[in-house]
Image (cartoon, rainbow, N blue to C red; front, side, top):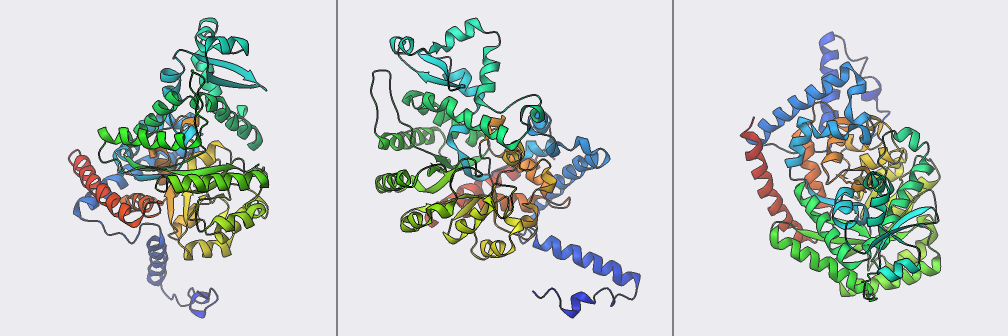
Length: 493
């Protein structure tokens, strides 16, 4: 569109009456409304009734915040707002809404910390130890633990008051005063990375992983999520008999646990695996890892769907550093790259260029995309979905106030966006509903209701790694659940 066309430059001069002014004002707002994500959807009679109800609730909640902006829950740090969000009428509807798929979830930060503490750390043979100032948990034989200086968590509980509260602080970012505890991006990321180190050895114990993975699926299902794509690396399984397992045993276990879960949850679509490589990897190790994951892909073609790089994006390598090797495997392995998870301009955000050029199927976060007009055009034209993780962006200090989130210009132009949860357990969330709530209240217009919520769900199915037949099946399952959701909510309003 030519932004300098005469009709646009002179449109104010052509308004001769106040009626013309009001008409043109309404016309501008209507055009913007018609561009917003989900605006093209048509609602049936039941959906329209629910839409009106949701808009009333949204208006009431926003009205309170207009009167006192400090009461706006998404603006507060999630550690401070979660309890109040739980009581929101809109949130309670979102909990019941069929949200489709979770497409950006890190496996080791998906199962709730309370479950880990209550159901795993109270078992026999669980030990803890500080290694390089990082507390770690591991399953060990008693003689092996004693020989290497590990202390049983059972003993720690006897000797330390409120040990479980202390343990929760080691496994999560949750604190009472986040601004004091995490004064900088670097400080919060240091603690964040430590939470993965704390549980890695514990979940490499095969029985613990099996129960944890089942719980991850359960928590998503209870939040009305039907399918998930986990970012992870194969756990080096061990047992207390001294046995160690092969890499393929990790993938076999994922499949076995999923099949077991489906026995009691027949409408659960399933789970897939996106292989995650640490950004600090050497080129030599990358080539070996690519070779290994391609071998596993041949053995587990349905489970393993793609590749990503993870870690603090300001550290380690940029995507361009590995572009030759990645281009060589692009036809064998889809890419789902984290890119643009940064506030810098012309630096780390240039990973977005490589993500687009290497035909990443989706882009994780894409926080910096709205400052790159050429890339925005390419992302839109190539239908590359943006994996939007609002609570993660706030907790990890990219964006304090979601009303200023750079995803909003993309939503306003109808870009393909899916709402994701990233690492929910680390900040005390479960499922997808909290991220949906923050997005809906803080990043959509006051008059934007059920259409955008429905579009978020549809996008999560459309941009998943499922094949066309699987997506059709997922749509059938989702449609039935959507119909049931409408019936359940409408009978109470």
